[in-house]
Image (cartoon, rainbow, N blue to C red; front, side, top):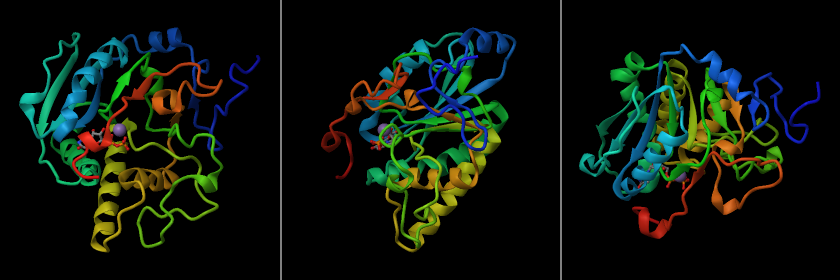
Length: 279
Ligand code: UDP
Ligand code: MN
């Protein structure tokens, strides 16, 4: 049989699939999940000015994200009243979890690990099978479904998916717990989308939280905050499935090269000066 995507890498050296359009048959996957009744937890943070992204995030998720499956969105926010009232399909629900607002955007972003850890301990592990943790300043544009489910799932950062290993923006200072030396590393994964079985994600978030806190004690902040720590974690704990940048696109990159056949989930252009708490 001819390979359907000879233009891209579709399997990692440790035999995890890399999911690109054309590598899977949606009808077969749909059929195999026909009787699947489990819940896919999805965490999203909307703190300070980022509540403005929730409406589009949730509305487009209803159109494209895990359609036909049970999804439990956990919206972490400092302003519960600002969570829009979006009508969800049967089997899908939203829970709001109140979190404090921190003054630095870096801290808002990094502390997600801690709040996700606590939410897994308190409820998510009793309520769901899978957990995906995503950025809110995003919209779904097309299908994101059961093909992404796996034990530990990472997504290729769209900015660096074609870069040579030594150009990945890993944390290079030995003092940080996110350190990855030159000559090591498989891919540059995104911090804005990762997931897997709840207990596997629990290991990731607890490890990243611990390492973020250790860095804080020695007053070092990894180059790309929690994304750097996710990269270190996934170097040591290889994802069992890797998603192509179709699953986390950035419109600043345009429509991408010929390898990008479809854009599924993409950032919304934002005015950093306006939405971020400090620049
Ligand atoms: N975030 C938030 N409020 C903030 C800053 C960040 O809620 O003031 C959350 C939000 O979920 C956002 C994520 O942290 O999607 C990561 O931050 P951001 O999207 O600004 O980082 P980028 O994707 O631009 O690196
Ligand atoms: Mn983002």
